[in-house]
Image 1 (cartoon, rainbow, N blue to C red):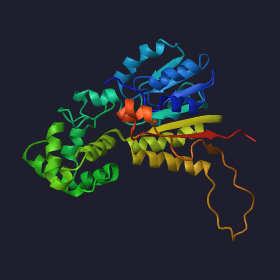
Image 2 (cartoon, helix red, strand yellow):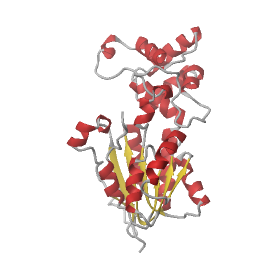
Image 3 (cartoon, helix red, strand yellow):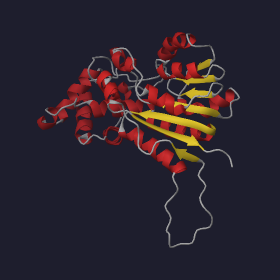
Image 4 (cartoon, helix red, strand yellow):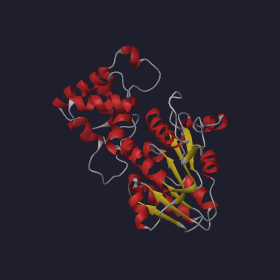
Length: 310
């Protein structure tokens, strides 16, 4: 399946790209958002991060069709501050994040992201990383597995699934995605197996998040990224599940929404906020996009802008 960037027009419009601006795409992928940013900033520069070297190799020629004013960086986006310092960039005009796994990563069965393709357990966005899904499934304790299934997958049968995994791997290592799916199914009641949706979805999500440290990286880059915005600079983030969206929502709220105070207690001065929200509620895909791109169903877009100095 060809990769189609989700909420492309909405995200680029919200970013409000300046022709001479400095921008960061924290999640290059196959370059859909980056191409549109480059079209709009011919006199500026774009810095693109991606953990997947394949994504950088495939996207670079597509970006060169637009211009040469970009730099691709093979590094986790939590290193945003360190990398920008390396390029002597103090502040930027905009930061974009399109989180989660890209379509090509899902569609490449050999990468082990999908529960619909049989492959060795992997799920690494960075193929040079040491931790893979195989190590998580076969070396984590029962308690560790239960915790990540609950925390990162919000899986109601976390304990039963973790226990089944530990039992099965004592006989032989669980090596492939289909072996893991079979183990998960054994732990679930028939009533759950008959429900709509794949029974392994939550567990696969949880393992992928653990392997790639997705949520801790997101929290780090949000804090660092907000500090790096120029006055009138914007950050826009597209999320695909409730855990990510909650982190983004709370990070934005912390800096852009005044804290509630007890009106009975006299207040000294008025709290001055450094940022304001561009979205009170997240933007979701249009009816047309939902029809043409099934992967847009769970997407949510949020934005924030740094206020001008007074």
